[in-house]
Image 1: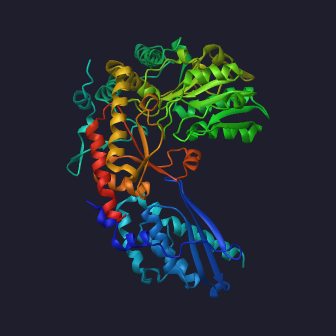
Image 2: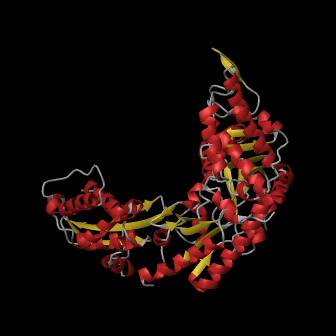
Length: 155
Length: 410
């Protein structure tokens, strides 16, 4: 049986109690995207700053506003730390790697994806045992994907 | 007769199920109710011995099935004190019943600039169909606001009703538990020349319902919230109104005749029942109504009033300012729906911890997002009570909540 300890790991609760990179960025220049979970009504807004273009593009700042449960908020918080300062191509790879970790099907795996270190994000693997909560864990990631698409489209 | 809770519980097979070695505490009946043995047996017996098409074939078995289906219609009419069983239309669910009203009556009677009055505590099922009509026809939607304790604020009712063609409102809020003054609202609608439409989905399973005493025009409700199966809902309407309404879905069963040039409709209720209906489900619904009437709707209501009082007192008494319960405190005007905010915990996390104790509640917006905005929250945790719940279930909820804050360290 999957216990609550599998879900609510200490690192997750830490990010929930003390979320990193909370707030807003001026938009524009930041890209702004909204995500919501129709199941529970949670809504978040993500602000993304990207410096450079194409292969040189780097996430220079990211902020998250809105509300959510411990899983969605901690996942968002850890995500902001993981992608801050990273090249966009690496961020997209991490996105794929994270979704694969959560057992989401249909993710096209690229060479080297499985080598990408997840760090603290690994703690969210316990969510897999609570299928209802997977949507909570990926909410911010899907919202980030939208913002990345906006950034790419604006080049 | 005393309300024998232990005996009643024994009639619900699922309530003896254990998960991880402990009993199920089912507090999500506002979502959907559990089914007694008599309903389960009626459906399987029907499938084993009497299942056949209805209204189509002339052999004896088909006659039996048709009689069973129509027997369910008569049972529904009896339950809500309809003037005639023919005024009861079977649909897929209460949502479809309201869509039927809007698509049939609404499209035939409302055009640009016409007004429908709703309330801010409606379920999406009584909002979105009207918004769809508004998008198509340019009708105006007005809203009755709420008081601080979650009742309808009727201060400006007459002004809001002035010039409206329809007033569609809930008899009992699925979030707040608020029971609205239905007869008074129907009277006010009629005084203003508006049609009175009642979403009674949460009301009928828990109360004595008398659609004639209400003076309503159209009433929508469902089977699965009152111990019956899912897949079948009801619409009751005054016969002359139903007679005048155009059909909703077209197809078999709803026609009088069809030629290459067109069709004429069957009389009500067949006019609104295109295609093969939920036959077995109707049989199950009939058994559910027999079950409810055996317990007595007035006694069910009394039991739930006492239990709701106990739940409000227990939760407030044990958690004080740490819990915020929405809706009126007076159980005379409140059903057994308990939406709450608990400390700073997100409802998803609350329900996750409760699930660890086998306490089944709903966390979310309860298909009432406009109401959530008015309450200033994105979601709530909701425990909803029914005839098979007792004070032990409420205590189990409170005990499970006690453990919730430890995990999150608030």
